Image (cartoon, rainbow, N blue to C red; front, side):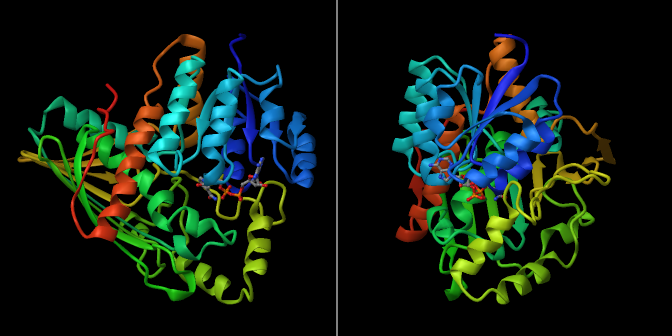
Length: 395
Ligand SMILES: NC(=O)c1ccc[n+]([C@@H]2O[C@H](COP(=O)([O-])OP(=O)(O)OC[C@H]3O[C@@H](n4cnc5c(N)ncnc54)[C@H](O)[C@@H]3O)[C@@H](O)[C@H]2O)c1
């Protein structure tokens, strides 16, 4: 293989508008193909990227011009498309959630292992430089033992335009946003969650899927963490963070109100689907919810995370971290670094070309999904759920 990784993208939907712009400028990546069932999107892809196009993921996986496949199709197809890619000896990045059940994750991991390809569970905020730095400080022990992790994210997730069955498949915010939250907390806390107790909330009958959760979890060493999420678009946690958005872009302080207002004007599920269609690759409103942003970029921010150790607290700032110690309050400015999708494809490139290990591999992804599924089970049964597929944080 040459020292450029040739990538085929499966699914030219909204996610692709966040994936393609940042990765297509990287010198070690060449986007060579796309697969989608929508032929107009494929035509626009040919125009923009001059790559091969296919109306099925299977056909794209057979192309000799693709080394790795980025799976950004709907959640219920992740397992099928990852397994197909692996069986064609293609390396794979899969969007969150990795899959919809632990059994699917197991089949995906077995396919990757059998075919000796790398499987990377992508789009996670544990790639973000501030989150990695928090982990580094915690692990170094300079602030003593880790004592607790608390994280809050409030935004308008539930009112973004969706396809009809989308909120049902992702169980609202739990399987869509939960993987980000859980990944951050697991990375910082060492990875191995012992048990989960959670309650989820369905507050809006017009969008009757889980729009909130309050989750308490314990790591194997007894360290507690709380994860709080509301996608109901009232309070916005970016207000606590100088209006920096998830991708480090400026977030309009009126985002919640605007997005709720936009959806109120939509008359039917079909009209909502058309709204989403316009936001996909090549659509008239392409990139509307994208984190791609050409203005000044701060560090990415997925909610307010406060990490407490015996001798100090740590939180993110727009440019890095604040460490509240016994004798001083210290700001650590971090270089922009690779983040999000750029970091993912670099991790895969390093694994494929330089033989380095993939950190966010399929076992890590399955462990994150297990926590999210446990949130749902705990909420349904109103009891603590014990876990069995956990793996430690990468070195
Ligand atoms: N929307 C976002 O902002 C966003 C952000 C990050 C991650 N994600 C994740 O990305 C994935 C896709 O989400 P989305 O919002 O882009 O959805 P979407 O519906 O906009 O995109 C899915 C794309 O896959 C195509 N597709 C469907 N079935 C296919 C098949 N059998 N073969 C080939 N292509 C097929 C669709 O035509 C569509 O273009 C989900 O797993 C989601 O969790 C979405």
